[in-house]
Image (cartoon, rainbow, N blue to C red; front, top):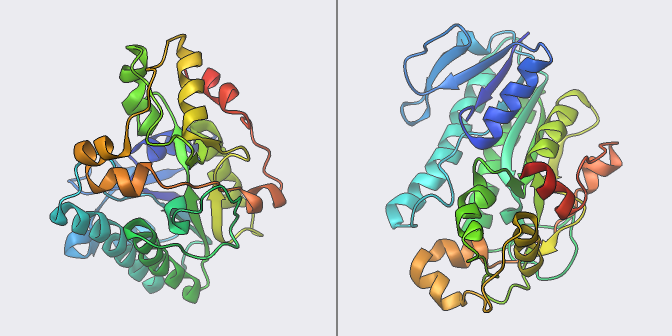
Length: 297
């Protein structure tokens, strides 16, 4: 019984597929090109195409596909791509799952802590309602499509992920060259909270919820110890043995350089706690940022 993964070539998908295969699981990756091996199957959500035979008899589906939030400046066209790649992709996938005579037991569908909007310095968990802003609205639409799988009797987990720490990508991977040159600096006030999770813990948490039938609904994929951006910056500089810039990067400079992404993706505060993971018995390997950075770097 296979585990189906979309977005398998991304940071999270690559790590998860490797971990599942290491334990002997049969993994099939949905790809948007001609399949090159028996462990790949074709789908093209923009054309509402998906090979139903690939889903037949699947044990679980992990849906991680979506255009990268931080790779491009947010033009109007790219914002539409951010939405369509998530909302339409999830709709096509769930429509296919609902047509199966034997649907999978569980769907793990990606989302983000941006669902909560800017929550300041308040500690929040999965009981917090939706916030405001483009990314919060995007997460709401994204999750609404995933919830439709529940109508087919599929246990559905909506993984609201924080910043996954890896030297190979994500916020940390993209900024490492800057820190290595001693140019790291807090962003804006530096007081905004960043909810992070080590890539190792993200993968293990995903495996935990796939096999734990008591877990469903929104689940925060974050460490129990969110930190401010200033603390994050100091920790990365220490881990690399580098100095920092004496002054923070002003908010207006970030807005000029990165546009709306800076205002919506880097400067809001998310002090998010993984209440459901902890309550359902998941034990984090990395609860302290310095420990996680040491393992990553």
